[in-house]
Image 1 (tube, rainbow, N blue to C red):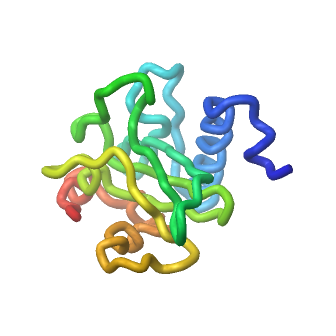
Image 2: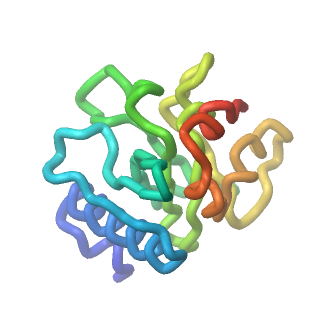
Image 3: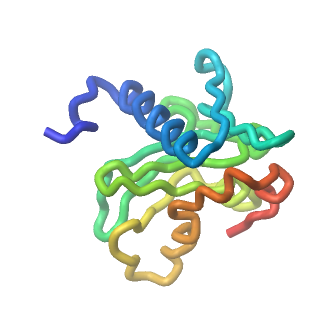
Length: 155
């Protein structure tokens, strides 16, 4: 049985993924903050000088063809999504292949909002349009950028 299959719920798995992200960010010498409770729209804060980035951590194990399907919604039961003023980055972990995507929130929440995305950490997509977020694979340098710079990223 694989590690992520041992969790009793997606909430437990999500908490483990948040810890994985915090460990990876700390390993890269970023200052990591964890807000108390679940009332914030972001899971982790990253301090860099006077800059504070709000990161929402997501994960997937759902393989569809060549890629992995990842949801970027706060809660399956709610119809509303995240808003751009709430977040700076999404950190999406493709668990089976140990790959991270650090995607500016403006890419997913900008003028044409998306609540899901296909990620292709192993094999390239068959269609050209599937490459839209591959440039964010292991993009840990984004954690050093300001909110202003990140808000300028678009699809």
